[in-house]
Length: 246
Image 1 (cartoon, one colour):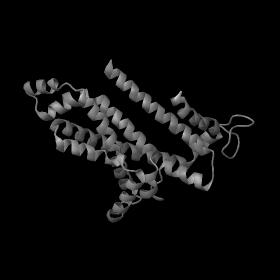
Image 2 (cartoon, one colour):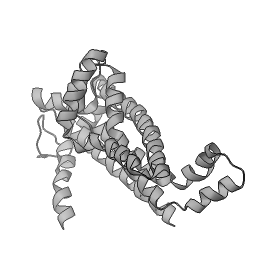
Image 3 (cartoon, rainbow, N blue to C red):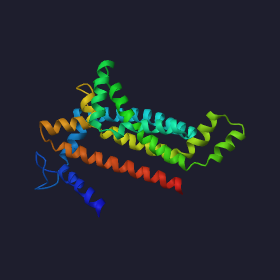
Image 4 (cartoon, rainbow, N blue to C red):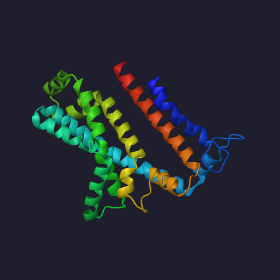
């Protein structure tokens, strides 16, 4: 009941997205898909979708590689230093987003990374690392270390053991981290408001500007698509975990 109470109000977005009015409202005379058509034919919306997709994919790959290696390294060390490093990796999601975005903005000014793909991707990758570290660390907690020892005893070096034994066994944790990092980057707004400008115009940024300038019902169609995408990725994550358990 609590979950339904929290989630059901979101479903109104789907009703508003098929409105027949020229403003945000529920349909009155009939259902219309004109705003989904507008979404698929508008250069501005498609451009923002493409930019968000590229940024999310690249930042997710960076976060996945860095977070996985960090989690494995901390798992291998298993000392106070590793715990401190793991805690440090979680800082980006522990501090308020506005504080992190303001710090990145000041730092990016000196590096001349404002309103660049590189600046936005790095900022998103840093905030995506904690999700990967958490999920991979959880997967490593259930990893049987005897498999690693057997691999080393059979003559495999550490690189081969990592690539052929450890990573395949923790792949569900890595996949979960990548999914959450992608969702975070795809939906992120605050960092985009500080770091991005007119050159890099992500989808959440365009929705934000649309709310401030005019309430175009196309935003409801975009929101509906984002909800479906997020839910779909979460179901993929659940499926991957269930396959591993089976």
